[in-house]
Amino acid sequence: MDFNFKEEQQQFADALKRWVAKDYSFDERARIIGSDAGVSDQAWATLVELGMTALPVPEEQGGFSGTAVDLFVVMQELGRGLVVEPYLATVLGAEFLKLAGGHDALLEQVGAGELKLACALGEVQSRHDLADIATTASADADGYVINGRKSVVVHGAQAGSVIVSARSGGAQRDTGGISLFVLPLASAGITVTGYRTLDGQRAADLVFDKVRAPAAALLGAAGAGWAILDAAADYGAGLLCAEALGAMEAIFAATLDYLKTRTQFGAPIGKFQALQHRMADMYIHLEQARSMALLAAVRLASGEASERRRAVSAAKYRVGQAMKFVGQQSVQLHGGMGVTNELPAAHYFKRLTMIELTMGDSDHHVRRFMAQPGFEQEAA
Image (cartoon, rainbow, N blue to C red; front, side):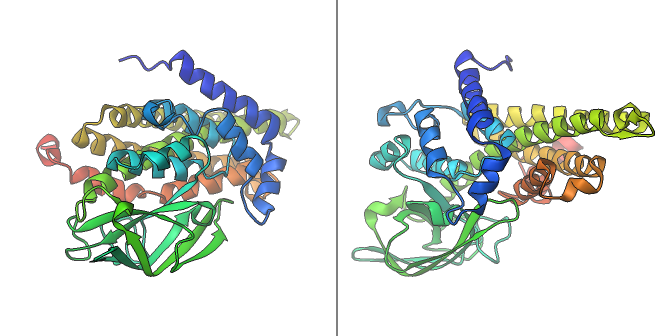
């Protein structure tokens, strides 16, 4: 198997890298985070101009039909630059639309950068179980009426439309009876409470009070949304692994530079063998995480469901372990300065911590991996 990126993929990565270095510096990012909006219209316009919003959209809707491997290189560079724009939320929303079919006009708007999306999937009681849905969708003559609450919707307040999971049948934790909808955020009855998260990103809690959803808002078949939800969640988790890889590469490089310049007892501390061993351990974690994240992207691109689930859960677990080790060691090797907002290392560590808790943490994914068919026989 060839793990080298294609020329077009590398061009996307290089374009993003140049933009981050030129226009999305650490100070510029701090300014964006501190603004009322928490995102930058100018940065979004640049992402659109570079073709990033068109990348995941099918060619039939004016996009590039990019695969998960194509998105891998993009998310890696966004992670390296600590970009806080609502790109992943929009790409994940577009994946729901692609899997469901029948929403070409919305995909065209996404590709043109005219529509930002968010995914309202989690609830207070659900933890990492996306099938644990208390939000209800009751059918009536005109479509559906949605009632419930969604929590920690990433970039929920910055979206034009939101993907919503709701229960139209079955018990609260059943995979059957789940329906998916795409609704304008400005729909009557939706209350949005936005806030800043630990890592400087934006999220929101959404309340749905008798929100009317026309039949055209339904994604796929009523009550049969689990297959789409499961596949799209894996897609999002796989892209998060790629983002984490970029962030780990950046914090590793920053730590290495610090060890070369920080002096103690008249010598750079990087000359101390004990610290060299720590850096070697960090590098091993980083390379193992890279292999698993890339494997997950390849499995996502192949479309085979059982292999996809195994690879994504294995990657999210292994990347999660690497994020913890690399992040903690980087902060410690920076000394007391490693936890201050004046240094990028602290911000990378916060972002890595949030990625670990998003789309299923390490504990959730190792349990999911063990639950896949054939695991017990292989272990035996």
